Image (cartoon, rainbow, N blue to C red; front, top):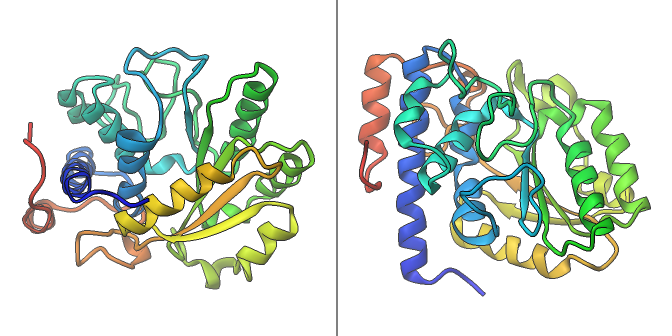
Length: 284
Protein backbone atom coordinates (compact mmCIF):
# COMPACT_ATOMS: atom_id res chain seq x y z
CA UNK A 1 0.00 0.00 0.00
CA UNK A 2 1.51 3.36 -0.99
CA UNK A 3 0.63 7.00 -0.49
CA UNK A 4 -2.08 8.41 -2.71
CA UNK A 5 -1.12 11.34 -4.92
CA UNK A 6 -3.09 13.69 -2.66
CA UNK A 7 -1.57 12.27 0.53
CA UNK A 8 1.94 12.61 -0.84
CA UNK A 9 1.30 16.17 -1.97
CA UNK A 10 -0.09 17.19 1.42
CA UNK A 11 2.62 15.43 3.42
CA UNK A 12 5.31 16.92 1.19
CA UNK A 13 3.97 20.41 1.89
CA UNK A 14 3.99 19.76 5.62
CA UNK A 15 7.57 18.44 5.40
CA UNK A 16 8.70 21.53 3.51
CA UNK A 17 7.10 23.78 6.12
CA UNK A 18 8.75 21.84 8.94
CA UNK A 19 12.13 22.25 7.24
CA UNK A 20 11.48 25.99 6.93
CA UNK A 21 10.69 26.05 10.65
CA UNK A 22 13.90 24.18 11.47
CA UNK A 23 16.28 26.54 9.68
CA UNK A 24 14.52 29.61 11.10
CA UNK A 25 14.47 28.22 14.64
CA UNK A 26 18.16 27.37 14.63
CA UNK A 27 19.05 30.67 12.98
CA UNK A 28 16.96 32.60 15.53
CA UNK A 29 18.65 30.84 18.43
CA UNK A 30 22.11 31.29 16.85
CA UNK A 31 22.73 27.66 17.69
CA UNK A 32 21.30 24.18 17.31
CA UNK A 33 21.45 21.13 15.12
CA UNK A 34 19.92 21.63 11.67
CA UNK A 35 21.60 18.76 9.79
CA UNK A 36 19.96 15.75 11.40
CA UNK A 37 16.68 17.62 11.89
CA UNK A 38 16.36 18.29 8.15
CA UNK A 39 17.34 14.71 7.32
CA UNK A 40 14.69 13.19 9.60
CA UNK A 41 11.82 15.53 8.73
CA UNK A 42 10.06 13.06 6.43
CA UNK A 43 9.92 10.45 9.19
CA UNK A 44 8.40 12.85 11.71
CA UNK A 45 5.77 14.03 9.24
CA UNK A 46 4.80 10.50 8.22
CA UNK A 47 4.54 9.29 11.81
CA UNK A 48 2.62 12.21 13.25
CA UNK A 49 0.42 13.10 10.27
CA UNK A 50 -0.37 9.59 9.00
CA UNK A 51 0.72 6.53 10.96
CA UNK A 52 0.61 7.21 14.69
CA UNK A 53 -2.59 7.26 16.69
CA UNK A 54 -2.10 10.19 19.09
CA UNK A 55 -4.01 13.10 20.55
CA UNK A 56 -3.39 16.82 20.94
CA UNK A 57 -5.00 16.45 24.37
CA UNK A 58 -1.73 15.23 25.85
CA UNK A 59 -1.36 12.84 28.78
CA UNK A 60 1.88 11.38 30.08
CA UNK A 61 0.58 7.81 30.36
CA UNK A 62 -0.31 7.64 26.66
CA UNK A 63 -2.94 4.97 27.23
CA UNK A 64 -4.45 3.69 23.98
CA UNK A 65 -2.07 5.92 22.01
CA UNK A 66 1.05 5.24 19.98
CA UNK A 67 4.12 6.68 21.70
CA UNK A 68 7.24 8.25 20.19
CA UNK A 69 10.62 8.66 21.89
CA UNK A 70 13.44 10.75 20.44
CA UNK A 71 16.79 9.38 21.60
CA UNK A 72 19.05 11.70 19.56
CA UNK A 73 17.49 14.70 21.27
CA UNK A 74 19.76 17.32 19.71
CA UNK A 75 17.52 17.28 16.59
CA UNK A 76 14.73 18.69 18.76
CA UNK A 77 13.83 21.47 16.29
CA UNK A 78 12.15 19.02 13.91
CA UNK A 79 10.15 17.46 16.73
CA UNK A 80 9.02 20.82 18.09
CA UNK A 81 7.95 21.98 14.64
CA UNK A 82 6.04 18.76 13.96
CA UNK A 83 4.23 18.93 17.30
CA UNK A 84 3.32 22.57 16.79
CA UNK A 85 2.15 22.07 13.21
CA UNK A 86 -0.04 19.18 14.39
CA UNK A 87 -1.55 21.40 17.07
CA UNK A 88 0.05 20.38 20.36
CA UNK A 89 1.06 23.98 21.13
CA UNK A 90 1.01 27.31 19.25
CA UNK A 91 3.26 27.56 16.21
CA UNK A 92 4.37 31.01 17.38
CA UNK A 93 6.08 29.35 20.35
CA UNK A 94 8.71 28.00 17.94
CA UNK A 95 10.28 31.47 18.06
CA UNK A 96 11.39 30.72 21.62
CA UNK A 97 13.59 27.76 20.64
CA UNK A 98 16.70 27.55 22.86
CA UNK A 99 15.89 30.87 24.54
CA UNK A 100 16.09 31.50 28.30
CA UNK A 101 12.90 30.41 30.12
CA UNK A 102 11.58 28.72 26.97
CA UNK A 103 9.94 25.30 27.08
CA UNK A 104 11.64 24.51 23.76
CA UNK A 105 15.19 23.90 24.89
CA UNK A 106 17.96 22.44 22.75
CA UNK A 107 17.27 18.99 24.15
CA UNK A 108 13.63 18.07 24.82
CA UNK A 109 12.55 17.91 28.43
CA UNK A 110 9.14 17.23 30.00
CA UNK A 111 9.74 19.23 33.19
CA UNK A 112 7.95 22.30 31.81
CA UNK A 113 4.89 20.20 30.96
CA UNK A 114 5.64 20.41 27.26
CA UNK A 115 2.87 18.69 25.33
CA UNK A 116 4.05 15.68 23.33
CA UNK A 117 7.31 15.10 25.26
CA UNK A 118 7.58 12.17 27.67
CA UNK A 119 11.33 11.94 28.33
CA UNK A 120 14.38 14.18 28.47
CA UNK A 121 16.97 13.17 25.90
CA UNK A 122 20.11 15.17 26.50
CA UNK A 123 22.40 12.17 26.98
CA UNK A 124 22.69 9.94 23.94
CA UNK A 125 22.08 6.19 24.12
CA UNK A 126 19.13 6.17 26.51
CA UNK A 127 16.07 6.46 24.28
CA UNK A 128 15.85 2.83 23.22
CA UNK A 129 15.86 1.69 26.84
CA UNK A 130 12.98 4.04 27.66
CA UNK A 131 11.05 3.02 24.55
CA UNK A 132 11.45 -0.67 25.40
CA UNK A 133 10.20 0.02 28.91
CA UNK A 134 7.14 1.82 27.55
CA UNK A 135 6.46 -0.98 25.08
CA UNK A 136 6.82 -3.58 27.83
CA UNK A 137 4.34 -1.62 29.97
CA UNK A 138 1.84 -1.54 27.11
CA UNK A 139 2.05 -5.32 26.77
CA UNK A 140 1.53 -5.78 30.51
CA UNK A 141 -1.45 -3.41 30.40
CA UNK A 142 -2.88 -5.16 27.32
CA UNK A 143 -2.65 -1.88 25.41
CA UNK A 144 -2.48 -2.75 21.70
CA UNK A 145 -0.86 0.50 20.52
CA UNK A 146 2.76 0.71 19.33
CA UNK A 147 5.91 2.45 20.50
CA UNK A 148 8.32 4.19 18.10
CA UNK A 149 11.88 5.32 18.80
CA UNK A 150 14.45 7.23 16.73
CA UNK A 151 18.22 6.98 17.26
CA UNK A 152 21.18 8.48 15.43
CA UNK A 153 23.80 6.25 13.83
CA UNK A 154 26.68 7.84 15.74
CA UNK A 155 24.63 7.24 18.88
CA UNK A 156 24.98 3.51 18.34
CA UNK A 157 28.56 3.86 19.60
CA UNK A 158 26.99 4.04 23.08
CA UNK A 159 27.06 0.75 24.98
CA UNK A 160 23.63 1.18 26.57
CA UNK A 161 22.04 0.84 23.12
CA UNK A 162 23.32 -2.70 22.83
CA UNK A 163 22.23 -3.66 26.34
CA UNK A 164 18.74 -2.54 25.35
CA UNK A 165 19.08 -4.35 22.03
CA UNK A 166 19.69 -7.61 23.94
CA UNK A 167 16.76 -7.12 26.28
CA UNK A 168 13.95 -6.51 23.79
CA UNK A 169 14.13 -9.82 21.85
CA UNK A 170 14.64 -11.76 25.07
CA UNK A 171 11.35 -10.37 26.40
CA UNK A 172 9.60 -10.56 23.00
CA UNK A 173 8.94 -6.82 22.88
CA UNK A 174 7.19 -7.02 19.53
CA UNK A 175 5.15 -3.81 19.76
CA UNK A 176 8.21 -1.64 19.15
CA UNK A 177 9.47 -0.08 15.90
CA UNK A 178 12.85 1.61 16.20
CA UNK A 179 14.60 3.72 13.56
CA UNK A 180 18.24 4.56 13.00
CA UNK A 181 18.97 7.83 11.21
CA UNK A 182 21.66 6.31 9.02
CA UNK A 183 23.23 9.45 7.55
CA UNK A 184 26.84 8.41 8.11
CA UNK A 185 27.75 11.69 9.84
CA UNK A 186 28.35 12.76 13.43
CA UNK A 187 29.69 15.89 15.06
CA UNK A 188 33.36 14.93 14.68
CA UNK A 189 33.14 13.66 11.10
CA UNK A 190 32.00 10.61 9.12
CA UNK A 191 30.82 7.79 11.38
CA UNK A 192 33.09 5.29 9.63
CA UNK A 193 36.13 7.39 10.55
CA UNK A 194 35.12 8.13 14.13
CA UNK A 195 34.12 4.53 14.98
CA UNK A 196 32.78 2.31 12.22
CA UNK A 197 29.51 0.49 12.87
CA UNK A 198 30.59 -2.24 10.40
CA UNK A 199 27.72 -4.42 9.13
CA UNK A 200 24.87 -2.79 11.01
CA UNK A 201 22.13 -4.99 9.54
CA UNK A 202 23.96 -8.18 10.54
CA UNK A 203 24.62 -6.74 13.98
CA UNK A 204 20.92 -6.06 14.75
CA UNK A 205 19.87 -9.40 13.24
CA UNK A 206 22.38 -11.20 15.46
CA UNK A 207 20.74 -9.57 18.48
CA UNK A 208 17.38 -11.02 17.42
CA UNK A 209 15.69 -8.03 15.75
CA UNK A 210 13.73 -7.96 12.52
CA UNK A 211 15.64 -5.51 10.32
CA UNK A 212 14.19 -3.44 7.48
CA UNK A 213 15.93 -0.82 5.36
CA UNK A 214 14.55 2.30 3.71
CA UNK A 215 15.39 5.61 2.07
CA UNK A 216 14.37 8.05 4.77
CA UNK A 217 14.11 10.95 2.31
CA UNK A 218 11.66 9.24 -0.04
CA UNK A 219 8.12 9.59 1.30
CA UNK A 220 6.72 6.69 -0.74
CA UNK A 221 9.47 4.24 0.16
CA UNK A 222 9.54 5.20 3.83
CA UNK A 223 5.74 4.98 4.05
CA UNK A 224 5.81 1.47 2.58
CA UNK A 225 8.53 0.42 5.03
CA UNK A 226 6.61 1.75 8.03
CA UNK A 227 3.52 -0.15 6.88
CA UNK A 228 5.58 -3.34 6.51
CA UNK A 229 6.97 -2.85 10.02
CA UNK A 230 3.50 -2.38 11.47
CA UNK A 231 2.34 -5.63 9.85
CA UNK A 232 5.32 -7.45 11.38
CA UNK A 233 4.45 -6.35 14.92
CA UNK A 234 3.09 -9.05 17.21
CA UNK A 235 5.35 -11.78 15.83
CA UNK A 236 7.73 -12.06 18.77
CA UNK A 237 10.49 -9.72 17.57
CA UNK A 238 11.17 -6.01 17.89
CA UNK A 239 11.64 -4.23 14.57
CA UNK A 240 14.30 -1.77 13.51
CA UNK A 241 14.40 0.28 10.32
CA UNK A 242 17.83 1.38 9.09
CA UNK A 243 16.78 4.65 7.52
CA UNK A 244 19.31 6.09 5.08
CA UNK A 245 19.08 9.88 5.03
CA UNK A 246 21.16 12.84 3.94
CA UNK A 247 22.18 15.25 6.68
CA UNK A 248 20.76 18.66 5.83
CA UNK A 249 18.29 17.25 3.29
CA UNK A 250 16.50 19.92 1.29
CA UNK A 251 19.22 22.57 1.56
CA UNK A 252 21.96 21.94 -1.00
CA UNK A 253 24.86 23.56 0.87
CA UNK A 254 24.08 21.56 4.01
CA UNK A 255 23.46 18.15 2.47
CA UNK A 256 25.80 15.30 3.32
CA UNK A 257 28.21 17.32 5.46
CA UNK A 258 28.95 16.73 9.13
CA UNK A 259 29.81 20.43 9.36
CA UNK A 260 26.07 21.14 9.62
CA UNK A 261 25.53 18.74 12.50
CA UNK A 262 25.53 21.57 15.02
CA UNK A 263 25.97 24.93 13.27
CA UNK A 264 23.33 27.63 12.80
CA UNK A 265 22.99 29.34 9.39
CA UNK A 266 23.84 33.03 9.26
CA UNK A 267 21.48 35.61 7.73
CA UNK A 268 22.64 35.01 4.14
CA UNK A 269 22.56 31.23 4.53
CA UNK A 270 19.07 31.37 6.02
CA UNK A 271 17.74 33.27 3.01
CA UNK A 272 19.41 30.79 0.63
CA UNK A 273 17.85 27.89 2.53
CA UNK A 274 14.36 29.40 2.57
CA UNK A 275 14.52 30.05 -1.19
CA UNK A 276 15.13 26.32 -1.69
CA UNK A 277 12.36 25.25 0.70
CA UNK A 278 9.27 26.27 -1.24
CA UNK A 279 5.77 24.85 -1.68
CA UNK A 280 5.17 24.70 2.04
CA UNK A 281 2.12 25.48 4.11
CA UNK A 282 1.10 28.91 5.34
CA UNK A 283 4.05 30.47 7.17
CA UNK A 284 3.46 32.11 10.52
